[in-house]
Length: 199
Ligand SMILES: [Zn+2]
Image (cartoon, rainbow, N blue to C red; front, top):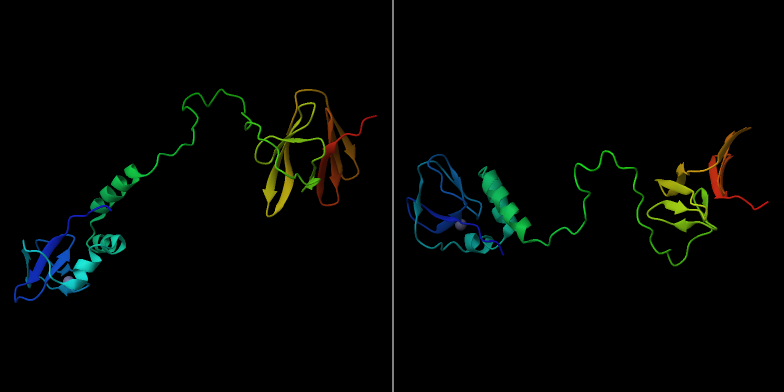
């Protein structure tokens, strides 16, 4: 466990030796056991603490953090949290190299193996014939990429990308889109995305 330097303090009139994050030059001091000693009524000592509550709480990270906050020792707390962060496992997520981002085309997530059971209908997508290609991303046999976005619990059609023949046709409820082997047709409350039936 991370050790924080604590200082011993005692009332000038005697009594137990308490612990506190730092004995201030002036003003009141609050001990780990929660007592506030008024200005001028205490003195810093080198001796080991003998207040049982202070000793017990000196092992309690949260208490010490709270005490630091109480004394506005924000920087000490920050140092402590930074040191703790260093000892944590490194984040293994690979971040894109900065600077190369601008000119790059959209990079789709790498294909993942299909989940064990893919439902026939995933929100607005009829999944038959599609291959999952990342979170909410599906790819048709001809390479039409369909992206779904979650609206609450429902997956809704968000985007279609295809470098090939696309036909958009005005229909009663909106536009029907045919792109490669995929069609997007309006329904009463949204769209359905599915593979086109072979003709
Ligand atoms: Zn105490």
